Image 1 (tube, helix red, strand yellow):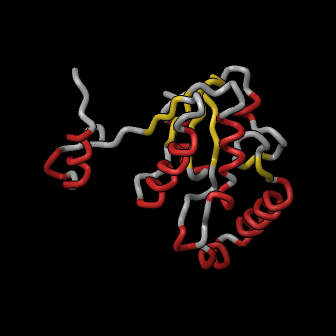
Image 2 (tube, one colour):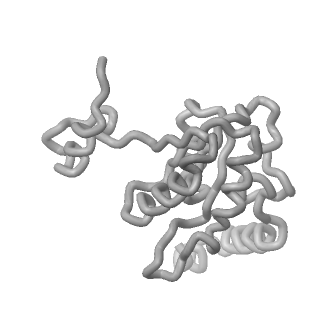
Length: 171
């Protein structure tokens, strides 16, 4: 991309550089959800139309965007900006899990939805958060796993099919 812009679109490169410079000076973290925002409180957290009793925990702003794209979730979010990874030196303090716990226990949140990725680190992060809130009066749920919508069993990996069998539900 850099070569293309330098060779073919120098004006576009200048605009991109200006946009990145603007973001670096104006984008901060939302005081409520930890997502990127140009204001102290992002638009989602400030919206009176969101269900404040639901709190969905995601790893990244891109994950939040994907959940929003479904148009099936109307609650609020908390963005971890990563996941627990002891091998990389990322622990609970690095993710601000104490801040998440305070938010989850503020008396408003009734259900905390763990929407971390289904990687080893994402699973460990979900487990850690779930255990820390186990007996605190907040319902903790986890995204379901299984065969993707429109997927054909013969093309799905064995681990996904195994998980779908374990998490099957009655009709």
